[in-house]
Amino acid sequence: MTWRAVVVCAGCLVTVAGGPRAQNETFRTSAVVVLVDVSVRENGQPVSGLAPSDFTVVDDGRPQIVTSVSVDRMPIRVTVLVDTSESLDIYRDRPDGPGLTIRSRMADALTGVAASLESGDELQLLRLASDVRSLRTDADLGSQRPVHHRRTSLFDAVAAILMRRPDPVRRHLVVAATDGLDTSSALPRELLNQVLDRSEAVVHIVSTGVVRLASSYPTAGFAEYAWVLDDLTRRSGGRYYEVRADQDFSPLLRAAVEEFRTRYVVGFTPTGVDRPGWHELEVAVPGRSYEVRHRRGYWGG
Amino acid sequence: MSTVARLAGLKLDRWHDGLRESVRTRPVVAFAWGVSRDVLVQRWLSAQGVASRAWRDRALPESADSARRWLNQAAEAFEAARQDEALAADATLRLGLTTLYLGDADEAFRLWAAVRDLTGDEEALYLSHLFTARALVVLGRSDDAATAYRHAAAIRPRAQSAGIAEAALQFVAGEREGAARHVDRLLTDPAVEDPWWRYVDLRWPERLQELRRAVR
Image (cartoon, rainbow over all chains, first blue to last red; front, side, top):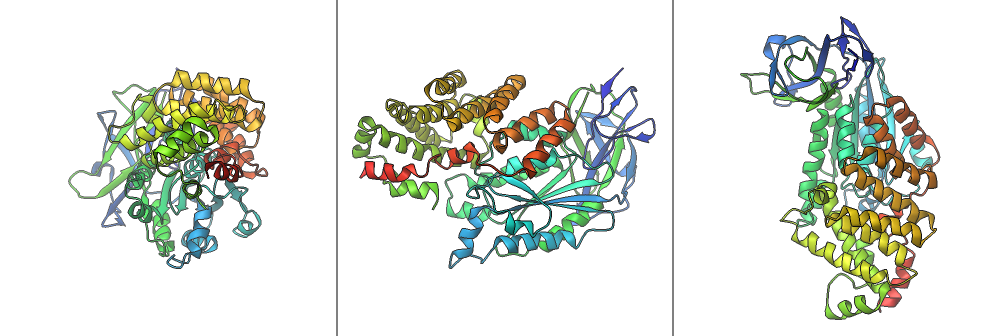
């Protein structure tokens, strides 16, 4: 039987007959191990020392047997996406504004991430406005002003990043720093969700603006927008952070990268479920009040 | 200055008898009024994250009375503006999106096809294909959507609004290498003005001066 195995979570590999394979490879076997990238925290701190017997996994409503748990410290690729849209300039110039500049936001993001990188890790940098652009260095930011920077296409940018070629030896973390509302993405939300569900990356979003927007325009639905961002990140197993506009969020990013390194990779062989299609996953650590976060599911078949 | 602020400057921020009469008799005012309603709806939909779900379910949420009112006002205004030859293509384009959000996808498709008969303007043609593709995605017609995205991309090859979506359809279909190559080009090639950005920004900001004079 020929069917396609799908990587489940960030940087994870689908293992067949004991050997790791690249994602989306076609297998001629029925023995597939699904690997789920799981964050376990208590009071905001990673929890270590958990064994297979500590976890439960439910695949499409069917309890599964956890066959492996590891906390391999693999190299990582961190993609930093920084909002450089016009609104940052606007708030910089306001007398009551937090004095932000695009450069300072970039510095916050890069400082937080770069301090966490280790040998073998990779850093990618992109800027976001109406469009999204890949930058070679942060110096490019000055020389590559957006063609049109009035708007913010956050969702389009996240989708574009997730579709880039995965690195077979690095787990992938995406950190997007934005100051507010997505105002110009053209990608239908359904399609964004499908990309998220098939991607291996974990997506964190740090927003400095939604709280301000929600208080300024209580009837415009901005409070609900925070839910949209939270939903997007949860779908990938990531987190949504709201910070004050004048807050240096580099410590937060540093902690997020470190937490990403210490995630568990929980393995199981799906039994009692149909292979093709979407599989809803529930991973838990019973009997503990830990915060467990993981991808919502995976595509099989 | 934001689009909404500019429109507020046109004194189109409130519905009143004088404006109602102007919308009926002056297509350019109707168009501006419709855009101002459209902007409010788009912002609301974006914030709610329900843009496509709303029309797919053939109804906006019951709590969205304001959005529904704005949509109906926009539809009425764009219908009036279509009577002016100079505004017909753009008003029809926008009427299509409004109609979609009000729940009539078939009529929206018909309107966007009509745009292609009304004008040879590249931006309008690009947008008619882009909007058609987006609606087809939500209807689950991925192959037709990919074709429509390709039509848009043929007009403006490096525009990201169609390009990223076209790559996403490839990615979802399992053609990951093709999608990755496509995206890499979009992220690194020299940027171009995307008709979609200009659309959400009123498409022709320079026309505001003309509208302002007309309203006064």
